[in-house]
Image 1 (cartoon, helix red, strand yellow):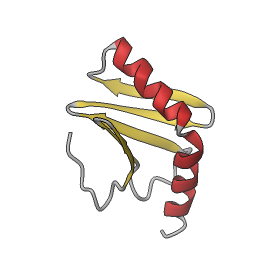
Image 2 (image 1 turned 180 degrees about the vertical axis):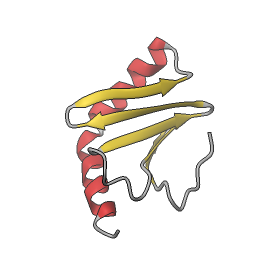
Image 3 (image 1 turned 45 degrees about the vertical axis):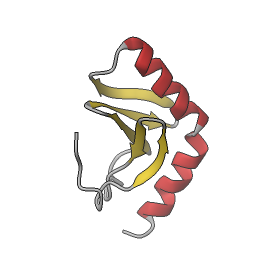
Length: 86
């Protein structure tokens, strides 16, 4: 999946996983998108909950969720910092 990088700033890249959010998504609770090649998912951040996923195996999705859990504080900080600009 390819997104307009100006409207979907990358928060962190871990291995093959790109974590990002879309600008102007302040109408939703804090969340993070992740893409790995053609796979994608979206997680609410507080509490962490899978919203949707496409393409990941169960094993891959468990790993992605672990990364979200490990980076939750960073993702929340970047979410609020970014949305302050809009």
